[in-house]
Length: 291
Ligand code: G1P
Image (cartoon, rainbow, N blue to C red; front, top):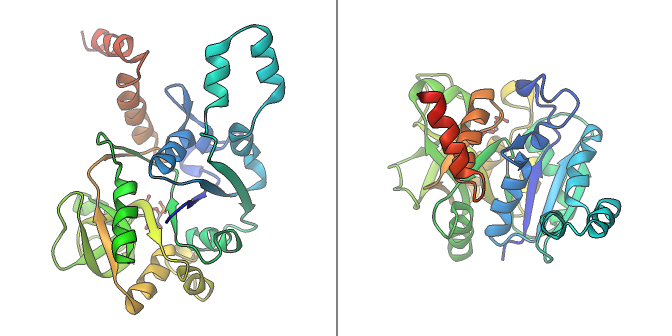
């Protein structure tokens, strides 16, 4: 069973400046809650029970958000604001805990994942990169389907989606004999971090959701610096794929890259129109803008 998920949140969010100058980019609001809450909800919906934040000293507000706030709760109780009290005390279901570990130096995504080695122990785990929001319409989300597939095959699962050819140099790109259908997995023949346009093995990009066996930690420990002079998770996955089957899982949902300003605005639009209480009024606002 996969119960642990690593969320690397130590990055300083330079793509999102100035918004991320004094608050973590993960705490920037999408409609009415911080972006990171959507990612945590996605993990919880897939059965995750321990969220492992790999974090930085400047990002305590993320841990605070998932902690209880006694003073605020008492004030809301005294004011009998029961709806708000429920909202802030039910951010996490009771079975879910959040722990954190520091990434002492910005040595790359692979290094960030390795920082959680002792917390993960010998269990397989998920990794969710919080820059990307994944919006799933189906009852079972993509991560849940990846976990199911891992449970039945023991093959690592790497979530991918097709990107335009001119954008391949911004992502990890997988090599597969034939692209799997949406919701399906296919064995990978390779994976490469940010290949130059024109040299990529496919247009299937790694979007930041992984289900990995514990042994990836040993591989990460000996992975040399790669693209961008950083220790890359992609390179450790390539090493794993030399030892055993690793599969690319083609997602069904929609992604929003909240690390980019336009991707963030798109996320606000999509999550806004689907919001249970604000959605209808928000749609009207958009209509007014069009007219
Ligand atoms: C990371 C990964 C890359 C992946 C991307 C998804 O890159 O290294 O393989 O495609 O996330 O967002 P980053 O965006 O941190 O440079």
